[in-house]
Image 1 (cartoon, rainbow, N blue to C red):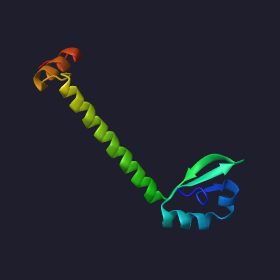
Image 2: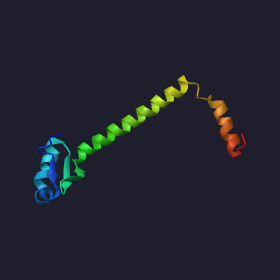
Image 3: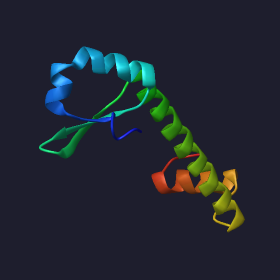
Image 4: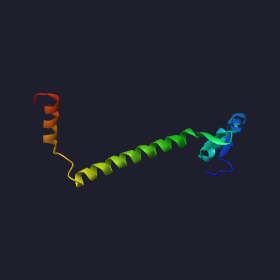
Length: 95
């Protein structure tokens, strides 16, 4: 992020939106829009946003794997047979 270029007043963005959208697509850098000198919104290219979502999803999956491995390491697991038996029992399901 380049604070000299990537922080703009909302009014400036509104008056030059086509040029800003071209720049967003070219640079892939987000643009912080301000109102009365305070950050109000962040605008970014759709492809860059999709990459951000993909990175977040991957990080979430990796955290789930890390937690599962931690559960195994600390003995917080059950074998499938006992888990299914408990599941059926808790829900009143016949075998």
